[in-house]
Image 1 (cartoon, one colour):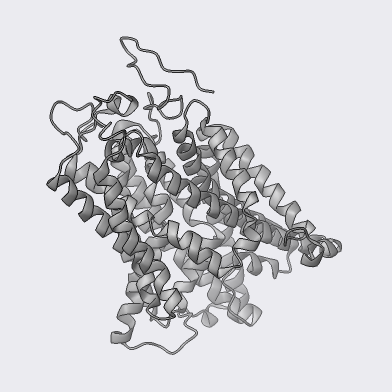
Image 2: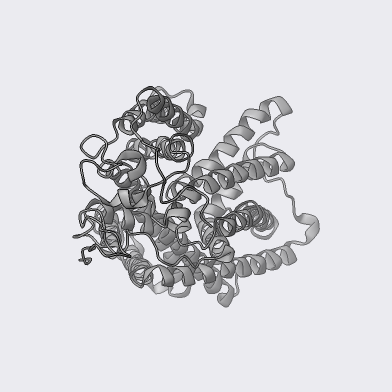
Length: 498
């Protein structure tokens, strides 16, 4: 339990119901550009990131069109990440606390809980996918374990070996997380570059085996699209890139708060997103292309690729490195967010570490190995919750930049006084709540209705953009029609700090 804050000349009073040691503004912000760069390396360099990047090269597009889609999509992500980073960097508070200035000191639990639940679901899925990769590596070296990998002998749908691999990764992730943000920073500072070293080695090995003349950068497996038909496919590819990063993009403030300057964030985002993502994608397509002449078929799963290499050391090094990379993205994207989000719900009873452990335990109770294999469950659970990421993002951006004009009264975010600036109506800003509903309903419908009708699936690709645009517009218009956020007076932060 965190120690309640007390009022002194240098430390303002913070209501214990709204504060603990992890939620108050940081006194020191030490992260530089490399730390932000490394964060994005860990976020990109996963099995999921590899497969996603590789899939874009198999949409019937020409290589230059895929390249354009990748660049446009990741530049959009960079732009939005810079926007969402600034509020938390200048105030030093995490994502859920920043929302108090928009949703109210109680209403901020709405975006916190939504983001936290989404993170729990994906935390379980990513851990499961990484554990399956670990199983492949284990069976490669200890084929005698094969009887333990039979699902029929498993409990609740997972084999004994599956449970062992899942437990190993579950404990490993929890160990890194439990040692705090500095340990996580050191882990991601190392994990991202390590994957690059292995990917470069893997690409060189496979290309040397295949011969450069047999490498094709066009991985399209279907008929080549003409220019007119390729435009909507390119737009869908761009939307796919943005949607892939929508989760960590929403709560990027949980990380940007540690940065020593907004300038360092922008530099780190530039290196970590367009530069890093483009290089990673090119490495991915080179490696995937080489699998065709070397193994006789296209392989877009890096774990499967390294498992087919006859050099044992290369297999175990590559396999464990990609597993480590997936652990990295899981920690930064799906562990830290619920840690802050659940701590925010009850700061004095739920610490940051306990919030993370709630997410970890919840991920097991969801039995993600059953849930992930059920498309209907994914559509109705993550389809609905994920469609709310866009509205929450749009509302936060509109609230900070348009309505509040980058003015934030930090101390007011820690008071339950009914006269407080962010008390609004019983702790909730009705405009923010209504904007979530107005934007959320169409966004959710755009995600699930096409699946139910069996047509118009392309609309689902743009659910994030639909929700974000509607959330931004709805909140800005509601605040103009009936203002709730008071921007008069001298703010603690006016967006110009650092």
